[in-house]
Structure formats: structure tokens, C-alpha cells
Length: 196
Image (cartoon, rainbow, N blue to C red; front, side):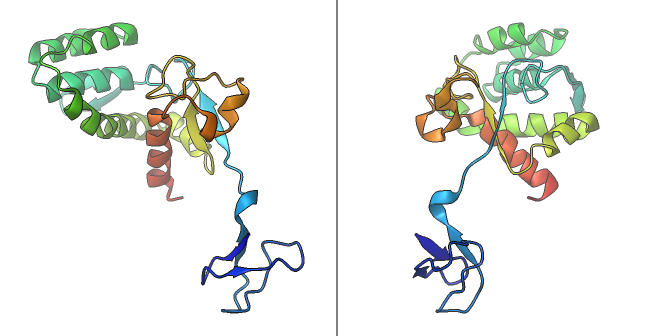
């Protein structure tokens, strides 16, 4: 199916060049073959990747200093729930993302509905600080332009896709086992920062 990008009329393909079809309705040279659009991915996983929540990257917000985006996320999870004791414990730690995560799981009282509503906003803000306060990381994020970032974690079906990068199912979002929340947050952040 060939569709005019300007007037959205369906037309018959006449010369096989989907980018240069001439619309008989609006006379615009603006067509696209929908079936030929291929989404490109930038896969990442584990703290060696600059896109990982666990990647060591110092940044600040107000009086707080963070060692990675995971610490920011878990600190704000505790603050959101009013658990100031756990929030203080998370901030007091040196770089230890595994322990940040463990403390985050102990936050109480915990409101799952509230967390699901706010967690992506919190992760977006933490990564905004991370990538803007660390220009070398910002350049690496910008270099992924025109792709969707994908956390290829075979274990995480919420923030990742529940599949490893080398799994054939990872190449098609329709066969992902997870929602890729982290990848979607980072893709949106990149678009906001570089104006895609």
C-alpha cells in the first residue's frame, strides 16, 4: 500500500520508486510504502553500556550527589513513598547499584499503582541529569539517532525486552517478551535533547 504523506490518499505504485511517486490528488511528490519501513535498534545491557542504569556516571540534583541512574531511581522511589530512612540509606552508599536495587525493594509503605504511574518520569529525569552533566555520555546517546534504544535483558520484562540481543526475536518488537520501558525512556530523552 502506497500512501501520500501530504493528503493521505492511497494510490497505485507506478514506477517502483516509493519515495518519488506523484500524487494525483494533491500533486505532491511525497509517498511512502508502509510495509518497507524497518525499525532500527540500538541494543544495550549491563553496566558496561553507558545506557545502563548501573553505568557509573556521577551527577547531582540539588544537594544530592549520585553515582549512577539506578541510585537516583531508587532514592526517588523511597522519597515518593515517604520512606525517608531508606532514601537516606541509598544516598549514604558509595557506588553499589545492586545494593541500591535491594534497598529499593524494601521501601515501605509501597504503593505499586503510584510507582507505576511515576517511575518512568523519575527514570527520565535521572537520565536527563546523567546525560547532560556528562557530555561524553551525551555524545554516545546522540550517536544512536534514528534508532530505538532497547534494553536487551533476558531477565527483565518490564524495563527490558526479556530477550538477549542475539535472540532472533529481539529484532522484531512484535516478538519481544517485555515492554522495554528503559529503552523507550532513553529514546524519548534523546529525541528531546537533539530535536529529532
